[in-house]
Image (cartoon, rainbow, N blue to C red; front, side):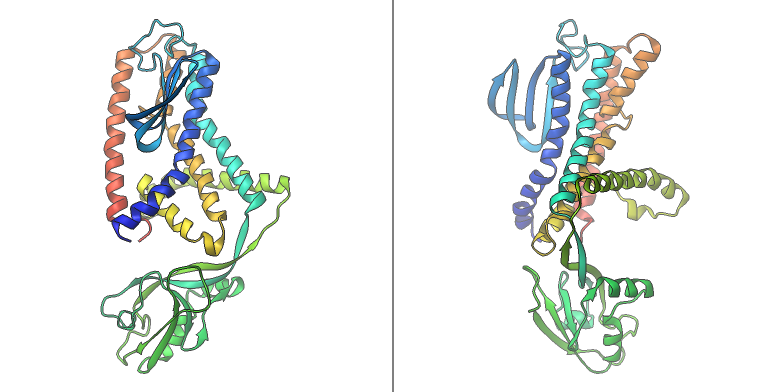
Length: 378
C-alpha cells in the first residue's frame, strides 16, 4: 500500500477506532471533575494547537484542535503550581475526589469495553466456518513469483482441486502441521502447475488463473516458495441471550487481562520470544484496524468491533501503570500523600511528571518508527 492510499484509508480507521476510545477516557475525567466541583477550563477534541472554539458552557470551553489524536481535559490547578489557592481547583479538592477524578478515565474505558463487547455479542457475533489460504510473502525467484503470485492473493484451487477448508478440515491440517496445497505442489514437481486465486475485492469463487511449471530441482518441502496464512471466507451468525452475551464479554475481557499478566513472566522465562511481544503504537493499531476493516465485507464487523472493545480495556489498563505522567503515576502520588499525611512538594511532582512525559514521548516516537519500518501487518 502506498503512502497516499494508506493515509486515505488509515486516517478514517484511526478516527473511528481510537478516537472515540480516547474521548471516552477524557469524558470520565470531565464528568468526575464536574461532580467534584473542580473547574474544567477546556475540553478539547484532538491535541493543540487549537483550530476552533466550538462553544462555551458552564465555564468550560469546548474546542477542536489540529492534531486528530484523542482528546484532553484541562482543569484549574491541575499543574500543581497554577491557581492552587482557587477553591475550584484540582489542587484544592479532597484526596478522595482527586483520586476519583483521575481514576474515572481508565474506569470509563473499562465500562466502554464491556458495553462494546456486549453489543457485539448481541448483534453482530459470528464464527468462521470456511477458510482459504492467503499468500503472505513470495520468495524472489521462486516458482510462485514466476507465475505472477502476489502477496495477499487468496488461493482457491491448485491444479483444479478445491483447496478451501471447512472448520473440521482446518483443524485436521493444523494438527498435522501441513496444508492441502503442499502435497498437490509436491506431486507437480517437474510438471506444469496451475493456481486459481482471488485478488482484491469481496471474496468470490471467480478468480485469476495463473500457470507455470515447477522444476524438477524444486525443494519438495516448499515447491512454490511462499508463506501462507489462513483467511476466513465465510462466517455464520451466532445468537446469544442477554445473559450469555454479557457473560461472554466478561469472560473474554478476563482472558485478555490474564494474557497481559502472563506475557511479562513468559518474556522473562524465555517461553515467549521478544519479537512476538513487540509493542504496538497508534500507527500499528491503525494498521491492524485497517486489516480488519478490509475483512468486513467478507467476514462481517464482529472482529473489528471486538478489537475496539479490547483496545478500550488496554487503554484503561495501560493508563493505570504507576508511571509518571500516566493516570497511574498521578494516583501513586495521591496514595503517597494519603500514607504520609502530607502532600509531596507540587513543584517536585510536576518535574517528575514532566520527565515521565518526555520519556513516554521518546518511546512513542521509537514505537511509531517500528510500526512504519516493521509493521505488525506486513
